[in-house]
Length: 397
Image (cartoon, rainbow, N blue to C red):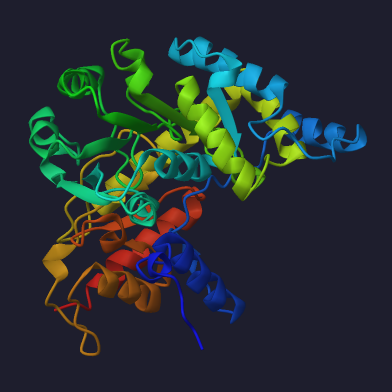
């Protein structure tokens, strides 16, 4: 007899993971699918970072690690925050976890009680809303528009805050839209939050280094908010280390102590080898990141120019990360004679079966008019995929 807990019954499977698995299943059958669904760089981990991991193995870093991370790694994170974000954290205000997602989960579980509201601008990364549900919190979804580059305004934030608001989750550069909040836009949000002293800000900055328009703005850089900001980052995107599973957070000491306690019961410390490699990554020369950023910028331009040539597709030009989030709703109600497109899920499945490309339906991110396309793959694959996209939608009448 199956009898899952109530919290599991409300949980949705990750759509990005599900689409990636569906793609791999088709590829295993010999079908040539171009995977534009997965959010990971196609670059290899830098050689000096791999060397640090190998050295750690040779030096027998194979024992349990401290729950919040090795002291040397937390010191490297402190240096990174100061050097790149001008943020002052102490090592005890840092917790290292198994990826940035783990940091966000720890934070939500530590902060949110039943009845607490969490403001989540949509489109949002797939896991935010479900993590709030797991903590028995209530999601307050704030819909943004493609005309405003999918960014929440200060007026929208003010309207969403109630006496029950516990936190805001903000991601810049954004997954899935690639939108980047400017200094002025971030300051406007900060001024609203300044007035509401009981609201915490979970700042997901994992795409910090993939920014095509200028300097990254950390919410914690507004000094009057810093003791309410949880700054979440990691090595996955900037250093092509998705599989190493290292994320980290900087936060007030009382909260890092709570997350440390929580993590001690769930996972204990993160991988010893990955932590040693992450020290090398965070102390890297900035050129390591710059080369990848240049490649993503070039691919962004390539993809935007090609998508603009596809009739019926509306696009906001992303300023960071490695995604576009085009509005494909003009195809709703159209059919190729076999399938009628009713929503973003239908459209993604149509592209998978007819164009042999994998995308993620926007419904997973809280916007059913769009799909997410990752351009974290080679130029050749992108050109081929988007040509197939353009040809496939010609069948929809």
